[in-house]
Length: 248
Ligand SMILES: NC(=O)c1ccc[n+]([C@@H]2O[C@H](COP(=O)([O-])OP(=O)(O)OC[C@H]3O[C@@H](n4cnc5c(N)ncnc54)[C@H](OP(=O)(O)O)[C@@H]3O)[C@@H](O)[C@H]2O)c1
Image: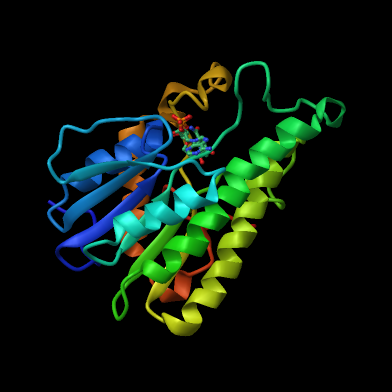
C-alpha cells in the first residue's frame, strides 16, 4: 500500500515535530508505506516508534545548530525526497495563550510563537532544501493553518498565531520561487490539516461538531494524498486536507 505513488521507490523522508499529534501520525503512516525506505523523525521531546525503518533524532526549532545537524543526519546516506514540518505552538501553560483581542498582546509570547511557527520552519527550509534529491519530484511541506489566511480572517483574535502562519505561508512562497530555479521538479507547499484532535487544539474544540474534528491519522492521511497529488505547477500554494486551495 502506498499513499505516495508519485514518489520513487526507496524514498527517504523526514518529519519535523514527530512528537506532536499530526507529526506522529505522519511518521506512522509513512513508515508503513511501501514506497518509503526510511523515516527520520525529529522532535524536541524524545519519542519512540515501534518500526525498524524509523530513526528518531533531536531538533529544537529555536536552535539553528540543531536544525543544521538534523539536515546532515537525515541525508548522511541518501538525499531526502520529502520533508514535512509538522511542529507548531498555539498555547503553553499560562505563558502563551491565543489573544482574544489586541489588548492581550504580549510581546514575549508573540515573539515565541513567531520563533517556533515562522522562523523555525524558515531555518528548516534553509538547511533542508539544498539536501533534497535532484531530477525527480520532491516535496517540502509545512503544516500551516487556515487562520493564517489574511483574506479568510473574519473574526479577529489569535493575532500571534495568525501572524505566525501568514509569515510561514510567505516564507514557503519565497522558498518555492528560489528553489524552483535550480530544482524545477520541486514542490514547496503550505498545508491546512483541518481541525485535528491534538494537544494543540484541545482547549478550543468543545464546540466543534464531532464529524469536523479529525483524528491525527485521518488528517495526516489526507495531507499525504495532497502531497502525492501536487506537482511543480502547484509550488508555493496553500492546500487544505481535502485538496482545495486556501486563499492567502
Ligand atoms: N490541531 C489542529 O486542529 C490544527 C489546526 C490547524 C493547524 N495545525 C497545525 O498543525 C501542526 C501540528 O500541530 P498538532 O495539532 O499536531 O499539535 P501538537 O500535538 O501540539 O504538536 C506540536 C508539535 O510541535 C513541536 N514543537 C513545538 N515547539 C517546538 C520547538 N521549539 N522545537 C521543535 N518542536 C517543537 C512539539 O514538540 P514538543 O512535544 O517538544 O512540545 C510537538 O511535537 C502545527 O503547525 C499546528 O499549528 C493544527
